[in-house]
Figure 1 (tube, rainbow, N blue to C red):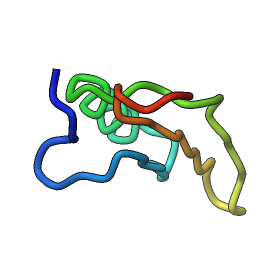
Figure 2: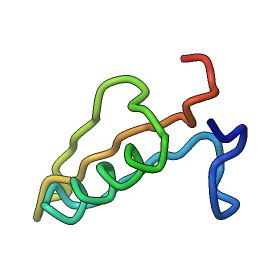
Figure 3: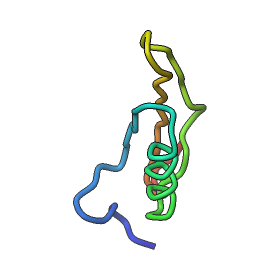
Length: 63
């Protein structure tokens, strides 16, 4: 188990973007790196599309 995230990534990340397959892929990739979901996703409508956000913590963090 690595003590720090790879590639200089932060221990806490908040991914945001349109609610689409690309966003889901970004979250999945973070999980594969060793992050875990932190809390529930958030969603809003910007007048054109649904925008989502998901917080992630590096596996060594306490949630």
